[in-house]
Length: 123
Image 1 (cartoon, rainbow, N blue to C red):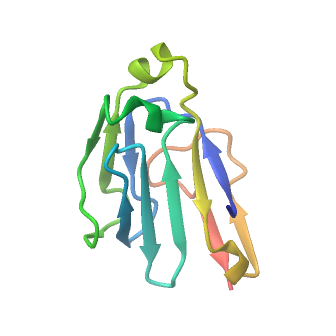
Image 2: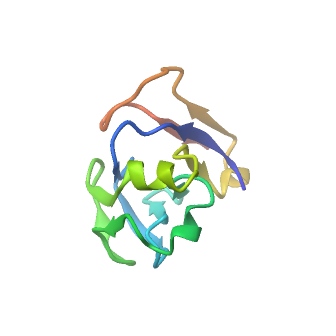
């Protein structure tokens, strides 16, 4: 799919990692796509196999085509519901067009919070 990083969320909220346009919102709320001003395409997929929850436990706060700012809330999700369903909450953040860039650099920190450096696509 591309280069990126996986995050184990400590709370049920996904915020935009950058100023971007929302390019894709899955109806189930489990995944969202963004495209930044420099053309970086980002896919954030909340948990693994969470599409099977059919939207239960997810609330979407943005629409396709909307411009979002770094740190803006995109989706809220119920960590307990996901875990009780036996699904992992680990959340990949993937640069889906990483082949268009020389490299994708990711943080070396083991814990991040909204506003911290996460990753950079390098031309």
